[in-house]
Image (cartoon, rainbow, N blue to C red; front, side, top):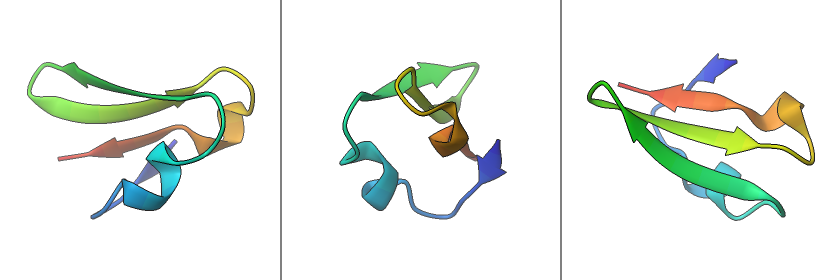
Length: 40
């Protein structure tokens, strides 16, 4: 999982979901788990 300053490019990928957990923003991608990322 990458920690990134901006999730904008990742949230536009097919299958991407933006989720907020414990005050952090995550991008979860079931189609391609390589694009999992966290912000904050």
